[in-house]
Image (cartoon, rainbow, N blue to C red; front, side, top):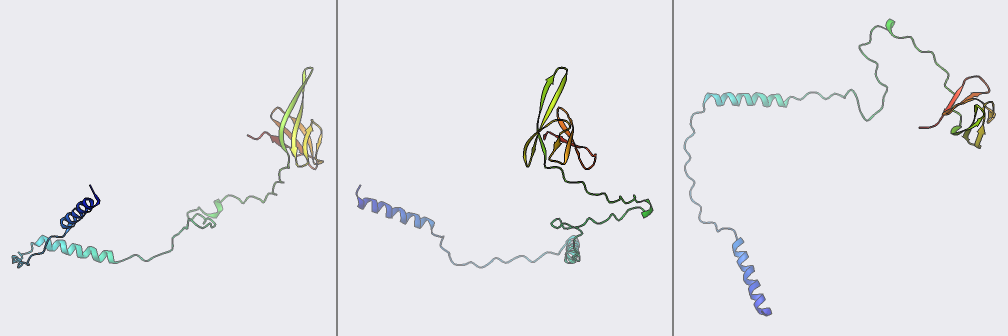
Length: 172
């Protein structure tokens, strides 16, 4: 086929598509048919209309807007319970306790065991800001703590200022 035959076939295809997609022609308008007169409305239809009107009136009434009791996007002090028994039965207020001192900047890194005869001598490996410390029972740590006891899983330290014991264990 030559270019002329391609052009002829393409033109015929476009023309056929255009004619096939054209809207149908509109003929002369005919006179509308006469509608039959409406029949009498049954009483049940009137009842339905009255009910619909009553419901529409109820929908038009809107409740007054009020601020919600809680806002999940803001933090606030939790309100006290409203149905609490009288104040005489309330628990006594807890006395203010002095805050605990911050934990020492020391962590337990490991424990080494040496068998000397029948007994086991343990050495604790502690990590502190000043470096790695190897300590035994009775040694001072950083001039603030004394090693009281070394077990297979933990080390007990006592501050030099008072006798309150502190326990360092392996982190899970």
